[in-house]
Length: 328
Image (cartoon, rainbow, N blue to C red; front, side, top):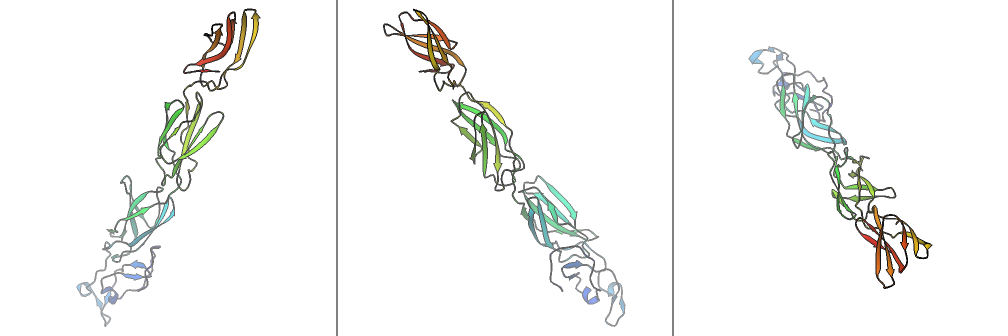
């Protein structure tokens, strides 16, 4: 008998079988190919034809009494595997086809493939169990023991899900999301991209949330993120969200405060708004100090003010937003 080789094409070659070959009631293996024998006359040692019970042999094919053996697999790509196995040791006939039973480990998918092709197209980074059986023209034989297989990793095929933002306090916001539905591997990190009209930055995190504590007040920001395996992010981006940070006190005072005399007892004050008001300016507070040293506050909605200055000393200029007040 020749040495066994892994499966290949189901060829149709062999040699003539004698009664000595058939006396073991087993098919003959030639160079790894499994063949049952075809019906034909059996002869005695003196050359006489034996018929019926005298032959003591079966001459028709039957269902295999054993399963394919030594089932193994090889990853070709993240979506393809190649199965390898030996034919059944007791085929009881000519093997016509192999049946591959394929099931995802979580039980959500099962396929039965009648084929002589042994390359399977599967989902990326997914665990399956595989069983193989062989069939003659009579029917299907036993299944092999289940084999667990795992397809290779790849970059994600879908983006992180449900990106949302929550205002916590001041300029502190929290971004949250869910992992991709098709990660195709182990997610090593997420990359969060955040930008406004003047700047852009990115941050890598391993969790599914991220807090920003140093954003600017009353700014519109946009954000999206990606998920990466060891094969990268696949250029798959989440949806982009837009949010506005809350208002706050102005970061700087009004600028260019000047005055112009109107009369001997009145002046006109002028100033420019703060460069970073951090909100909508509701009004300005102008502070004067009288001759007694008492401050008087005057509210102004515009950034000009006509003031009767008799008995007053212009001390300083203040301002107020919706949330807090600042002074120079």
